[in-house]
Image 1: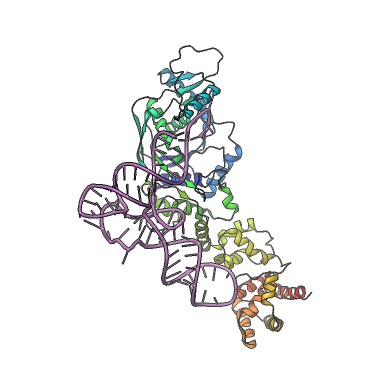
Image 2: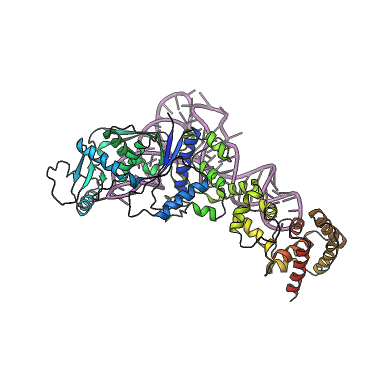
Length: 462
RNA sequence: GCUCCCAUCGUCUAGUGGUCUAGGACGCCGCCCUCUCACGGCGGAAACAGGGGUUCGACUCCCCUUGGGAGUACCA
């Protein structure tokens, strides 16, 4: 049997890190087993679904590299199927029309809550015979009163629910549209989904869905409820709790491979290992090693992993993203890939890279006051004069040659390299931080270096 | 409130009755390297929530307590 998993987000909110991990685990499970991974947009709530959210889901998955196998299914388009299933249940006497108003239901629940009981529909329309003309109604599933329903979960093991706890849920709204539990069952069955991997916030729905599978005489899939990712405060990820659209991570300078690796390790593990390529993840991933405990989102570890992947990247592979986030025109300046190479090991994301690259393409207009004060002392001018003279006479403007000049000048004046390197660095970049000074100057070019040193000294003197 | 889930360093986790004086990673602290910032190297502090059982022996199995989380919609 071919394994087929799906990711079924609702486009009512942005796809965040939690949803992205659910998609990742689902995708990994399918890819590991050589199966298929499909996408279904659960847009049956027409009021709250937005095209923007749908776009974030699609863009986010593409960015992460989680490819899906067939055209995405928009659930709303399958409404006729859902209605047909509901009718089938009515015909079998397993569903019925309920004419209770929202107000009536609200009061009922309030009363139950007041008595300390779990709010449940009491089934007052179950045995109603007459069908009043023109009165709005919903369709409810007649759920069994006796016995228990067992969810056999690949992550959590067997979870037993007492059927008495489950009330008659609405499967068709008064406008005739299907609700989640009906649609998800009908569609998962129709799409041939073999394994449902989803967040454990859905665990409580699962016994209801299993009952629907049984009522519709359909084969239920295997379930795997993965623990949720909580925000740094320990609460569920939501718009309110620091949940950021997954696409924001791209803007913040993260690499998709790093995000994927981080997300995979949140809940899943493989011994002591931390770093996994995409292919290793596909080869090694399994549901057996997914833990049961919820985890917190740890930005620092993501940052570390991102740095790791950034350091390992080919500079040329980073050019486009850096250019996209760089606030300067690179035309006429040093080769961006070479600049990136010089900056890589001291950056942990694309934003750092872009920020560090900026001065290569734009002359500094202001100079860091603190750095100036700290590094420009009495002897500095003499050092700079000597450097300018000797560097200007160089036949070859290469790091080694530049390095030799700096060393020679410092030896001549019997001072450490920092006495000269720092003033130069500040003059050419505006601040006290850059790649190694010889590499930086080589990249900048002889003419530009000397021009900046000159104009910088003029500015400071003024 | 009720139902369900969960419980190892601050965080992510390894650990499936003895190999645990509990391992790794991030972060943190110290040292080294050093032209800045980083990278890197070395070292360190840091956890089995509590209480009962079961067992010759519990981090590992069972129960209770406590703590955390989810659900409880004509949302998904």
